[in-house]
Image (cartoon, rainbow, N blue to C red):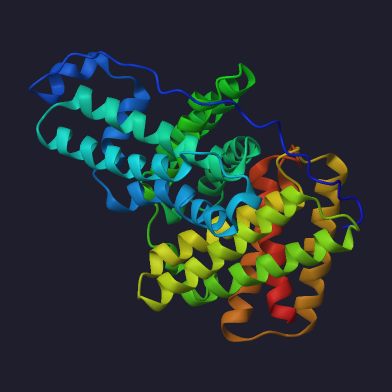
Length: 349
């Protein structure tokens, strides 16, 4: 991809303070219904799902560990690890409060937990992480539109995710980075909650993990071929590699759904390293389509069988979607093309 621009990270966001909240306690969840926003109602639903809670924590656990391992040279903000731990605790408190029929305070704790996730993300990865997370939220909505059979209540979910992505982008434009990130984190949770077995895709969890490593390899080769690898790209690729390792660990432990989720996060991080978060230009989108179509033709020429043939068919579906979207720079379109390029590269070997 000769048209790649060097990734330009957004300026580091300032400290993201948690707003105070003085909502009254209630004893019946329905008593506080009028005090809860649409986002709060979704939040109260997702905190009852362990996988959805973990989906939020997955956004920070690996990046924080990567940053901590690199030490002071990484420049992780003070308090980042503490924020990650507090986020985990806030989610637990939210569920406890909900079980005690205190829906308003449960929503407050869930909101604080998402804000702490945002703070930990920024602390570990820098302010540019928010732009990528917002793009991912839109990409998740597009993924539901592309494969509705993979989700419970797909059309309602698509609308919810699209709305959350829109709110996140609007808040980001008005410099409310915390609120923007909070919406995007909630979209991540809702998507994970409503997703049927992600391991049902071609090749299952084993292929998903192999594709995660292939994604890191392809992104690294493209970035290096561009001639200049900046510090932000180096860090994104390091985090992506750790996500792939985490996916392998989850798979080895028999946690297939979690392994696929971590593999999916690997794909988005590698895509960020190549084209985000400075935004995808039309030229970059065209170059990515060319890459996917070229690799698809090369993969087809190998006459794959079995799992590889099934994956090639899926790659064709992803290319059809990515090339048919009216706006070729739309996150969902770019994400589909990237995933297809990775699949075909893996098949070629």
